[in-house]
Amino acid sequence: RFLRLPATPLSGRAGPAASAGAMTAASGRASLWEVVGGGDKGGIVVRVGKDVASAMASERLSTGALLKELELDGERLHFERLSGTGPASGWVSLRLQNGKDLVLQATGVWEVVGGEEKGGILVRTGKDKSSAEAPGRLSHGAFVRELQLEEERLQYKRLTGSGPETGWVSTKLAGGKDLLIKVGADSASADTSVAKLIATLKDHHDSSWAALPSMLADLSEEDKAEVVLELGKISADPALQSVPQTRSSRRKAMRLLASLKEAAPLAALLGDTDLGVRCEAAILLAQIGGDACAPHVDKLAELLGDKEWRARCWAARVLGKLGKVAAPAAAALRKALEDADADVREASAEALRALGEAVDGFKEDPHPKQVLRAAAPVAGRKPRILAIHGTPANSSVLMMQAAKLKATLGKDLEWKFVDSPMTWQAIPGSKDPLYTEPSDLEKQLAKGKPFLWWYVHGNAVYGRVDEGVENLRRLVEEAQPVDVVISFSQGSNCLSLLLDTYRREGKEVPWLLSVYFCGGQIDDEIYRFKEGWKSSQPTVRIFNSGDDAFFGGGEVSLDFMYSDIVELGHKDGHAFPSTPPRAAEIYTQVAQEIRKRVGLAA
View 1 (spheres, rainbow, N blue to C red):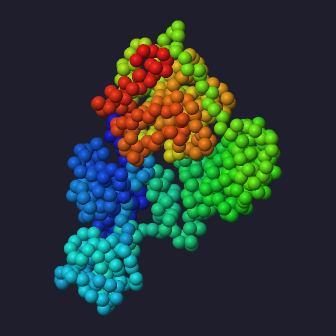
View 2: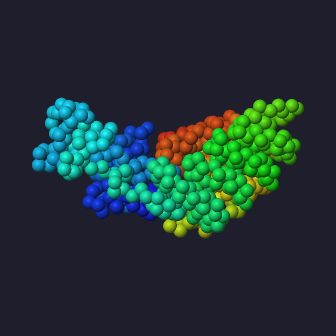
View 3: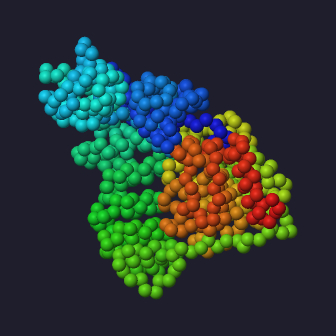
């Protein structure tokens, strides 16, 4: 987490894929997998051993390659390559730790099980059994991709084995003997039962949740009702939020309900006691949109009277997104034009305009500027840097992380490292890097102090945000004068949240320059900058542009959040850069930018 330590698999438990693999093996047929990740990188990483710290193979495994499962241990797959390019065998991860799939159980794949005594099975050029025979037979044991299936006639593309690249074959002989059988996740033997899906719903490990969308996509209408009922129970259960392992489960279940276009159970949560649940329910209703939300407009209008400004603001924004369907809420929106909160007033005015209603006399600036500290050289004292740690970490950890930058900057600036008062806790058995038990090395770096975080974080579900932002604000203001704020990961995210608080209050940002090492984004939509607004706070961001434990394909640019930003990429993972010569280039450029902003010579 702090150095370039090996990433761990997302979950050590056998999730849905593992269960299916074990079952297929029990039926006597090898489970097949297909590489779906790495399309923009020439394939996915292969390691020679099961341990993610083992040596990396010299080649990547090509996207689209077909794999035979030799062993499945949690999220690690030992494979034999059947098609594609790359190592003949090795170990790969099923998915990145952000849930992005790297390999999936193959679908639409058939195995030739007949014709062993005849050198393979007969192939014809057309669907009709009287069409011309193709030259050569499709070899016994070959795997083929289904292109078209009409009754017992299969048009295929050959993946392995020998014989015609494509053509038409019969799946059975006239007497019923199989010539080909379907294998993989969509085979007759694969467990796609509702019972399995519901069991997966109740398994709150992230690897299981990541597998759910594809499972939901294959539901029949009859099965869907049973699953929707279970999702409704999970989303409405406040007890889940008191347990670290399941605190994000309610909102995840709500997102699955939205993917199934189930508006009613979401609307029922608009009156929930939890602010995050109320806001999430409103946001998801906007995603469903249309006539499905018409019966629930009154409940959204009631949310305009919520005690929390965020809930009122999201109610107004969502009513605007629903458009004409939200017409019955016009009176409540007009009343909200007098709300004590400027963001709520603005969102209500925009919603009324979306309904085609005139909003005479409403002149509030829809995109207020960030009030910046005047740019001027620091005089009469050393410029001061305030350093904000990530999570799970503390100021001692950040001192180690920032050592190279501190050395590059020299002794013309003073540093102040601060600690969040919010204690972080590991989740026993978790393999998520946000929650795993710290290693002995990490504990040594922490120097006996507790591990901390700024707010409850994980899987785009935040908690205790206002408390965390106020803690950071207090530390910033107690440390004044501060000229530059340097932050890592979650600390950067919290700094973005604090800047939005200053924007809302019209208060001046009390430092000149923000420097983010990783992070800065706001993953939870409830707390993001309002649509169309960018902070003009001068910002330098150093980010990982390659795969890491949190971001498949690297972190995205923050140019949609900041209008005055310089971004410097590296490929050292979710960490301060360490590999020469790029690391030295970055530290030099950051040091020059800091010194320029505070009025020091380069």
